Image (tube, rainbow, N blue to C red; front, side, top):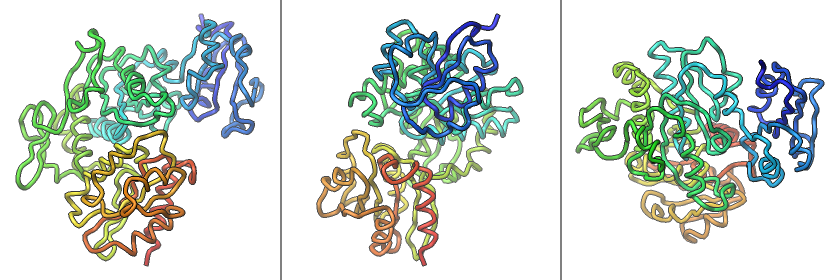
Length: 443
């Protein structure tokens, strides 16, 4: 019997993930399928098939409470009063990943964390590819889960955000990693990082092999039954999956054994050494041979907008780290590049701060960072860090022009905004592309 037969289901929020959900749900014998979006002209509206009941504008709690299930977009908080009222009335509230969990047959590995999860997701997927295993990649990483669900896949590699995990309760994982937990999306979590960390920990609920960051206790499970599934830890020192720092280089190690010289990585910086270690731990948990892992680590080019070297011009290196939408991610880029650029870094930062505390950046001012060019909606919060070294500019274009005029041989100009981009751009990727185009246009 069709598990959806005779049920009323509402899809709430017309993001990419829910467009794919609509196609999935239409294959079932529903009593009614409706679509809701608070926007009067949401993107992707034209992709909704004809015949589906569509409702745009403010949500109505009573109306939503008449359904059996709400499939809520990750971009919409389940604590929205109308959704919470429906949940309190007994309506099941899920996301696309939860519905995927009820369908998927092949093993799934998953990655969450505040920073680095896209890089680790791509790297682990690349390791599967090098091992000759057909693994599909998706969720928070580009592809909606119902666009990749197929009986031909031998494995899945999912990047999971805290928003997706909020509506996921039965996803069985062969292995998972929680990379780090730092201030991000605190506007969604009432300014409480512990609520954010709790959402991240939902990844552990049905995981066979859990990998944690031993330098970040918020990445550890709290429940005793989940602690029993800790498979490995990674971190800065030379334990388990770790680093041996010598006078000349850094080695990536497993249980004290040198696996490879970090100089053989194409992706650079301490944060990427940690990403590589996390990927190795996941790959070991998934049974990917060590020689395949090393081959992948030596040939993985990294992702666009993640500490990507764009150009070296007259001795000045230009880096696109537009994906750094929080303070911790910007810190990772700064510390990761500081050993390469001892003459200093000129930082381009600003945008929507998402309720973050920017004060951790202050420790780098006058040391690794020589100057910060501040733009965007919350530029004033960055300017307050240091009136001498933080400069107000109108936009990223002006920030780049002024930084290029200031920069000297051996220095780096780093776009690592520590903020979301939606005040001036469609997303971090557009911000990054604009930056790359501007850098390449410098004569």
